[in-house]
Length: 429
Image (cartoon, rainbow, N blue to C red; front, side, top):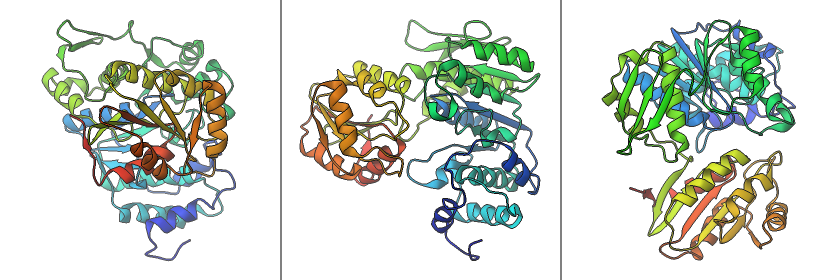
């Protein structure tokens, strides 16, 4: 255990040394330590899993719960800029001291149980939330679902946003196998929302096997765009006919927002909100590093962590919908378990200038190797720059008003670029 009073940064560095494996799926270790901690579940626990859109759905769910008068804790991963982002109470990251106090309490009871960095952080979130006396917890699944650390707490209702290929080395080689893992957050007799119209067979099978109350778009809840550009939502017992578009950009956010409304409806919270409240809350939600737009003196900078093919398709649709009179420069870095071709090919026709960087992780693909793969699949040259900060400088040196810079491929690229930008950037109106 570290000396009393050690800084959060020292704890995080030490946690990285605890386990020989960065990822070690399974619930036994977390469950053992959780039994030794003074943690009781709150009145409401909502778990959000899926391949893409989890962060957006957590942000919207937390905001709606707060608007309904519930004091709410949200646990997400990974972070963009600061570890504290992972553990938030009522939308605000908790201070270093609260996280350190939780780490100290865990270490005092852990004994010889080996925990990964993520497992340790998950237990810390539970302890921070317990000490705050919250009404509701919103828990984002880190990877998969069945064996992810957050699944040690049974949810009152769950949301699986969608299922696509990602983390295949850990979750399986095809969508059905991955869907089986995602379905592990289901519980007997509890509602589970599936947020996409493309429902894998494994989702149906697992819901039936477990006795979960599976709720699907187009069958159990409905939504659509109105003629005036707004949208409407209808559930089993409630209809919201006049809603404003969500504040998060991209057409996919309508489906995410609809699934979130189905989730909080299943949790018995939607009845506390009227349509104007729902509209105002969803319109105000913003999420760092996900379709985030900044104005850099006439150059649009779009930051999105898209790190798998499905997310790249969504980003490509966003680029297609935007008006860009100039050139598009893409700064990209990726980890070694990601599908480079699957991310690059959907984006390529929108790109004039590729810049490959080494993401800030020991699992990163080296910039030179990433550039080689991008050149092979795009049949165009790709500039090699070693760091995200240097890549931003290189891109800005080649831009003119009307151009745009896209930063993508990994949290470990978007975060460092945002650190460079925050001094002089401002949100795009």
